[in-house]
Length: 149
Image (tube, rainbow, N blue to C red; front, top):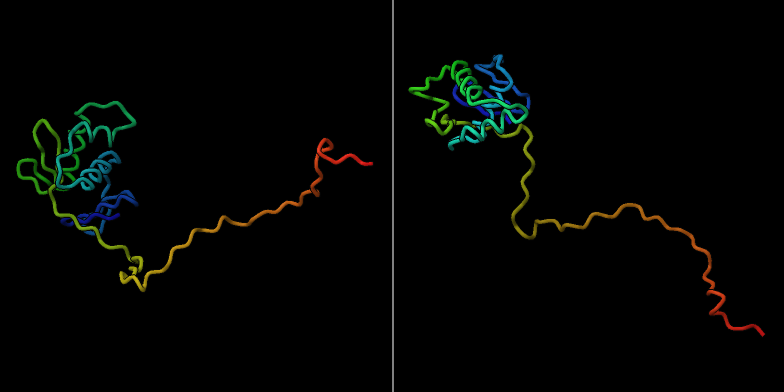
């Protein structure tokens, strides 16, 4: 999905950040941090949650988080004292505060009619091809056969 804010586009599928149409070189962890903050925009994301989400594969301290937030602020030309994108909540965590747009997909799925007469019936999927096996003719066990005689 592409997230647009200000003059930037963060693309989580292509895993890149674009400014005014040009790709920006950014450390993978910093980009992962930015995407996580954007996906959780408007809410306080605690430091430990960010460490678990972004650095799950490594044992790091809060200094790695602080460093990546600083790198993001520099890249986005953001100011911690007057933030436009990343707000610091002292001793708690961070909040992405910019307005974000997520463009609609180029080929949206057609909408279904809401009127009951236009709805199609749902059928159970078929189990697939059925195999049949020939079995020998039934003959009862010898103990249950009538004596011949």
